[in-house]
Length: 509
Image (cartoon, rainbow, N blue to C red):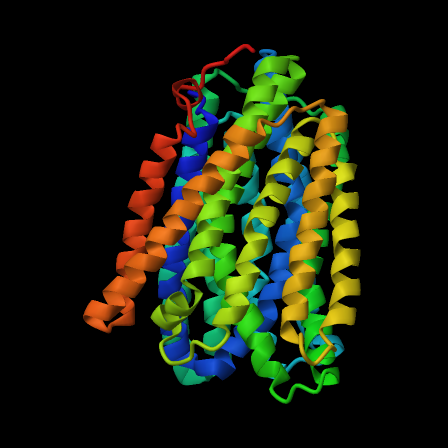
């Protein structure tokens, strides 16, 4: 199977991720119409448990892609399939165990967490997903290890289509029984979509395996130990990352009340239900870079290609900020118009979005530097750095949010400070661990200048369009379109990317 460059692999996964996000809208909108806020509440109660499983399991496909890339680099084809076999045992154990607990202990879980008893059906619906997802992630890790992101990208789209069609379909069919049954049908959509994606990936996997002439795969416990050694710290890092969001859920509403804010719940909703959702959209693209990056970095590291490793590290950082800076500037300049475009009259919280957007570059650089460190066998350091970031976030949230003049913006400041801390610590680790020399001018300054130019043009375009049309939607969309064109032109004028980088050539300095 032909390898893909970092840029090509990132574009494929990024495009697939954005399409999947768009398709997700066709899941949310019908559900809101069918089962309303109460039904959505039942569905949402089950989802964090599923996402916790996804976080726990996330280390295995990352470890797979790294080990497979290393074995492929030295021509160990049989070893590649040993990784798949051992990972299958591990993921099935984790997936079946999680599904078993969610299915048979749904009522005790609901009782312990003091949830509404009607959320039982949503928990039963979601309980089938871990088994299916465990299989799906094995094949995604395999193809990512071969440095071909197309099967993973296609599977993301198929997964979302299955989730929309079957999840919404079951919600509609079961609605006469009650909204709690309908929510259960919607929750089952995760398993249905995963099944469709798994079937597609298995067919592609068998085709590749047969083309390589692999028949029997031997058991290798040493490979299993290698996978566990890598996967455990990566999974811990993923779960620590989710704690960043849990901190807001636990502390912010409580501290807002202490500050004397009457509408604490509304402010919390603006932070997490609006601003944070929009800030998370660019992260879909950055995660595509990280997924493509790890096997490429691992291959160059194991083959001791220092120049290639240096080039790929700089390219990854450049791709990260090329995504991060325009998203930050765009949301900062158009926070109000974007909120009005998406939420119409309920656009309260645009100031939260404006300042929370400043966290985007630091979140994305944190993700990228973490992937580089993981790709070079440094698994523990990113986890420690994330934990330090969490401590910073807790301290600042507890100190700033109760101050009446700051209130909800204290949570925003805490989030930015936490990721700034992790970014700095990760960059220090990169310089110490793998002696990386970052090209600050090419990788940082040029994209920043291009983004600032775009920001000025976007702001002027919006003001001009509003003066002529007095229509926010038209003015906002026109400004975004003009901003994209201006940013692309600026990127080309500043020569942010060289021909060698685009063609995946090594430049020796």
